[in-house]
Figure 1 (cartoon, rainbow, N blue to C red):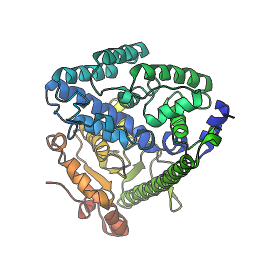
Figure 2: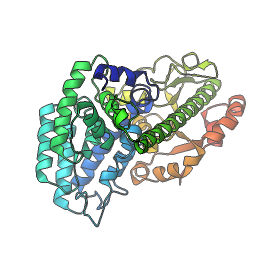
Figure 3: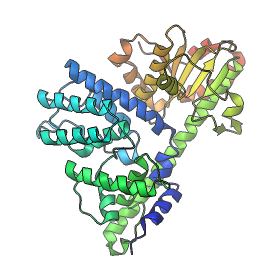
Figure 4: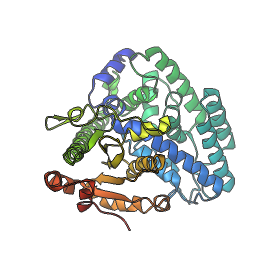
Amino acid sequence: MMKPLEQLIETYKQDQESVYNTWFVNNDERLKAFRSIRRGVLQVVEDIRQGSFPNDFKGSSLEFVLTCITEQKQLFVGAAHPFFWKPKLRIPDIYENQANKRHFGQFLEACLDTTKEETLIKEILKLDGLKIKGLGPAVASILYFLHPTLVPPFNTAIINGFNLIFNDKKKLGSWQDYLRIREVLLMTNEKYKSLLSNDLGAITGLLFDVGMRKILIGSEEFLNEKERKKIEQQLQKRHAEVVSEQQEDDLHTEMQYHLLKIGKSLGYEVIAASNDRSKTYDGNSFSFIGLKDLPELTIDKETASTINLIDALWLEKGTHKIICAFEVEKSTSIYSGILRLCDLSFALPEQQRALFLVVPDSREKDVILQLKRPAIKKNELTIHYILFSELREHCDALCKFGEDHTIMKKIAKTVS
């Protein structure tokens, strides 16, 4: 017998390996992704408007957007696949067909510029009416990061979960089915909002976990042995991913600690990202090492919020001038970290400061590739990068022998 929905929600929230706990509520990178993806979509629109959007997915600003989305993992692992250019099938037909490309750009721009639900639905229906080959509800994964309380993401596992929970037979590639699913989700979410969130990522995560059979709804007694084995393998894979993600989080926290420790030893005021200030490493609380709040900046509120999410900042005592900024990257988008450093540099251009990416040794090639992007090079920003192994090995020596922030250049690298 199928479990009541309220019971499913409680099971979902109590499972420490559910989407709710590993992505929705306990993932600092989730919040950071929204601004990066929004900026990326703005760039897609501008590239299409200026005629510089390429005739392929690879190397395009759309690829950056989908990379940021897929690096959120879980719900979004396959989000980029529908946008890969498949020349033989001519799908999705937004690369070589200039009219379709323009329609897609105008659709994204209209969705960016509105906060009204009726406008979003109108634009979706207009896009559906154009019948652009291969361009279906997968676009909802982009729209979710623009309007998380109005547009749920969409993929095979989500629709499977929806059909299992609501005993339905909705299809994956239909905008009409997507809009019906959305209506049901909005009504259901309104009823159980106190258990979930205004953000539709929470309830969509439940559908995903049910669709992946991570959460069982009570109908599993009808599964055959092959289906049971497949579910068991999926659960084992998910457990391994959760363990790996936790190890990445631990490494991230360790690197932040080293940066705060070095900055403090060099005589600077230090502060961690706003969503990391309650963290502790090796018995050392970040709140005891650094400032409680970032001093007020004379910049717009949105940019100030972004700067508040930079992983570690060093400030000059007395003036509170930002001397160094560090973004620690794991498996998330390096370009997102670069954007936050760029925001800082452009928001306070009168101040000179050192900008650093701190990255796993295995991602050095990725860093070099991103720092060579034309959009970065044309801004003439110098961003150094430091490998995890170098920061860990030399932390104590930098604390002991360093006189000011320039000591970090001893372990940092640049891209010419």
